[in-house]
Amino acid sequence: MLTSLFRNADRRNTLIINGVTLGVAAGLLTNARNGASVAVAPWPVDQPAPPVCCIVPMRDEVGNVGGCIGDLLAQQYPHFSVIVVDDGSTDGTTAALAGFTDPRLRVITGAPLPPGWTGKTWALAQGCAAADPAAAWLLTLDADMRLHPQALAGAVAYAESRHADLLTLLPLLELHTFWEKLLVPHAGELYTLLVGAMDRVNDPGSPVASANGQFMLLRRSVYEALGGWATVRGEVAEDWALARCVKRAGYRLLMAQGRSLLRARVYAGLGELWAGFSKTLFPAGGRSLWRVAGVIALLTVYGVLPPLRLLRAAARLARRPGQTHGADRERFVLALAQVGPLLAVRAALSRYLGLSPWMAVTYPLAILMGDAMLLWSAWRYRSGRGMTWKGRRYG
Image (cartoon, rainbow, N blue to C red; front, top):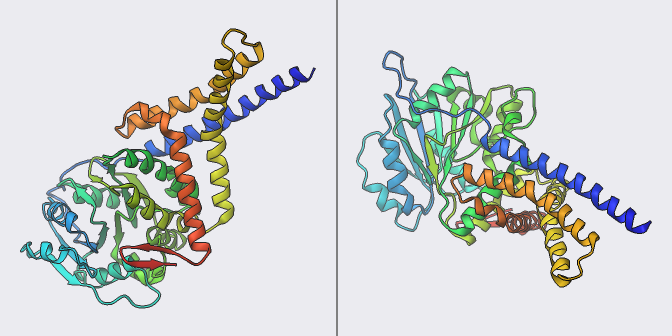
């Protein structure tokens, strides 16, 4: 009787975990592939082009100066300018910027960081303040972005046609090392679970708001009506904070795929990955410990427990190859039924991201590393220790 009871419990657990697995996996895969894609297209010659000012904050970005600024100045768009805010760089960024002589480019030396501001919001505020008064749109970019020559034309046309006030695009991710392939896709999932899915971001009736600070196209009039970057001056996750302000004020927020227009290598090594994601994970989740605990519990049930059960069941079979019990075989089959759907969905997501489907087998490790980053981020902020990034401390 007890054996039957345990077997029934195993079956019920399998059904429950499979339901969680399929639900979470399908949601994450749908979100990764969700949203309209902004197409590569030239600006129509018969339509007036609203002036755009592109603002790029740079602090020790010597390796990105040529690619980012070169791509910006090569944009096939009738009316735009570029402002770079050199935020106290000491690595050769200043000299690299001096090599550009294009009249559309203006380099500003950043002023000292005032109290209550983060480095990026202060740099962005200075850049926006120096923007061409005629600019109807402000485009803020991270230095790691690489742009198709028609990226600006495509983004502005998309925003204008859909009456967006803030358009943020998701780039094609360049993943080179094992740690990038492991952690960058999973970090995207963590942000989705902490903040909300793309369809909710684009729903005017939903309070969910998010943005990708690598590429944010904002109407100048809306920026000024909101009070500019001063409104979110102390926020580490300034892109999410500004998106929330935009949506709360009743303006139109849109997030879309920009994979044909943009590409970026976010962080290069494990140390950069850990520091960069830890800096923003807890703030992105609203600094809520309950949300952190819920995400960790969900991901553990979804992606860690099923593989552990399969390994345990396989080990029991391997210890007794000649005298396998029916209960052991059933446990193995049930565990396999839990892991199979998980691996299939993860393989599909890996293929979508241009990775080998075999990266699916590393997903439990990605979850454990992601959980550790999330816990580290929460502990550092809640304890008052804060995070350090490019020589500055964020508390």
